[in-house]
Image 1 (spheres, rainbow, N blue to C red):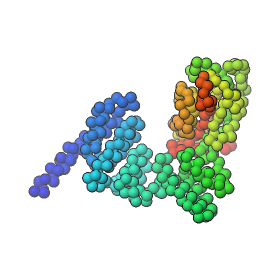
Image 2: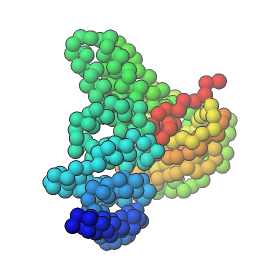
Image 3: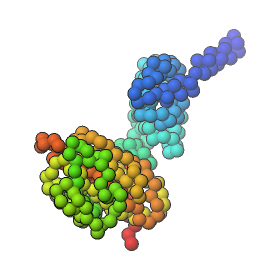
Image 4: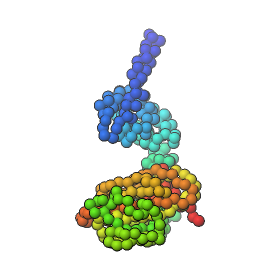
Length: 369
């Protein structure tokens, strides 16, 4: 009887799982506007019904669609894990760990793999996590860094300052997230050590700035002012209230904020530009990460990278992550920043912060001549 039923079971399983690739394609075809939601919902149910056998295909498909698709896939994986726990089914932990450790997989899928391991076997996750301290995925580093922060604080509580310094420096070397770096830097400074935050993150601190140009009725974003046609640091141009010329400006803020209010004053309905040159030791791919709550455009070597025509929607570090390609030697950056007409206190900021790093958030420092 067993010989007869066993192939039948396999045949049933193959039929049940045969649509997994199609279900994954359907979900990854989702559009941000919600197009395809109905078909994706049916595909999602197929994946959940397939159970733990669908987990590895789901993880492999993560990162192939957009953010919306990744959210659906994560939810499917978590739902499968929840159902398995209720039915006392085991997850393929060895396969999940193998997937996690393979850094060629998409970071989002690897993060889901770690979360599944943690939910199913916390002890195993605790064993793995410290090994992720220098992982290419910024998100996967966080837990390992947090463990070091806790260890450093424990050393401080025991008055073991030398060991605490070593631990906090190890945590700083691995940390790429602003909140964790703030805690680490504060701890080190409490131990008498100054942390060079701009260097750690790779903020560009020295710029040439020019302005103000006009932004009445928010017209400045699309207006092509002279700095967009040429970058001539010795030239002067008609500005909003008279002739304007380039002047040097260096940030003294730990997170590299370039505050146009300082050289130009608290102005409204204005536009300004900032330019700097970044000397790259090699030709390479990189990321430009910036934060700005005003209307802005950014050019690299004369090519428009990206822009946002909106105002005062909040600002945070690494708010925008822009992939770019650096040439060996000098790379010219031009930032345009528009201030609007609003007068509330929370609209005063007219600033940006910009850093250059790799995909892990690790600073790329300019070549020192």
